[in-house]
Image (cartoon, rainbow, N blue to C red; front, side, top):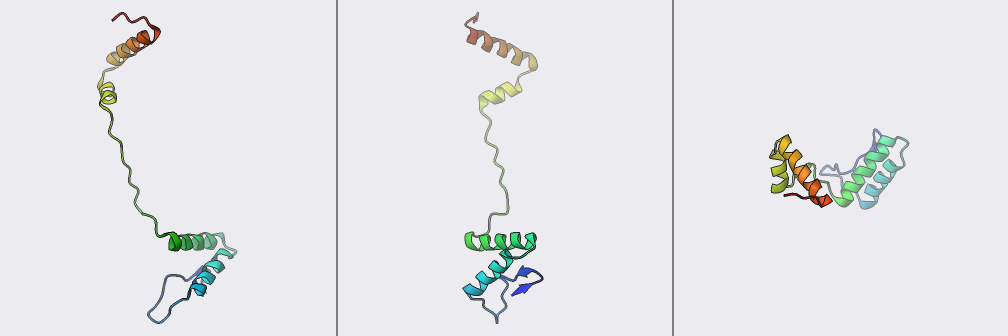
Length: 97
């Protein structure tokens, strides 16, 4: 059932069908192996068989930037500095505007 330290699972020819017990025995043999690589691979194969294969692609979705934040990004350094001064003055109650 084991070939070169790896459980042979999921690879069936037309003539061989593994029973559930044989499949579990192969996974168990892999999980009990002395080689940590074999144990990890066996656990990964077992989990993918139980839970299905995970999606192989990663989708990175950037949320849209709010208009106010984009307006601040588009400001020059002097405009941002003036905006900062006005916000600090409003918070301190010294708004002269």
